[in-house]
Amino acid sequence: MQSKQINSHQAKWYSEGEKQLTFQYMEHYGALISEMKSKENLRILDVGGGAGYFISQLSEVLSPNNSYYVIDTHRYDTWDDANPKIAYCQCDAAMLSFVFEKESFDYVFCNMLFHHLVTSSYKESALIRENCLKEILHVLKADGKLCIVDNFCDGLFHDQLSSRLIFTMTTCKNPILARLFSKLGSNSAGVGVCMLSEKMWMAMLTNAGLNCLALIKEADDGLGLIKKTFLMNRSYRQFNTMICEKTKVR
Image (cartoon, rainbow, N blue to C red; front, top):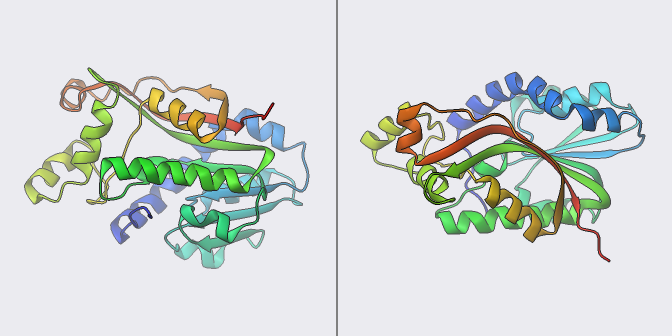
């Protein structure tokens, strides 16, 4: 089972948005990057790295002896003129274990990726995310780190309620409802997104065999009373940072 592929509308939006967010990602990973600067010969992978702006910026501040890789399901024009230190591969995150050797990477980054791992149903989308984590664990070294920036979306009356509502809205094909939902911020062009609550995130990481070493939560975005009520949302936090490692086997 594979996630839905992004369309040209999304690819254009992500490419422009990613360029603007790169420095924000660098700031979020500030302490981690300082740690990485003292190391040599690292192998670093950006899963869902899009146009490659983040990994390119990262390569400029770290050792020139490191190796950098980007995978994405969409091939971006920027890849053709990219930094020669960076290798690009067009493939699904579900194919990591087929593309790379076991325990290949010291650091794996996933920036605003997981809420885009969706398929035809909410339940099946959870399986997609679980499989992606399984594939990442396959290529992550025993002492490596998985570095994630993503959203937390906590339901008002039930933890998953807002998550399910957003998935339903962003996968809606009805043109009238789609226009209404786009005014509320849905830019997925019908492909859909699946935001997770903080509790869902921690459970998913733990079940996958990961230990969250550091969790940096952003302030509640607020959303506005109408949006918050409509989405049955208790809190919405963008760009939360999670640094994880494999659970140690005792």
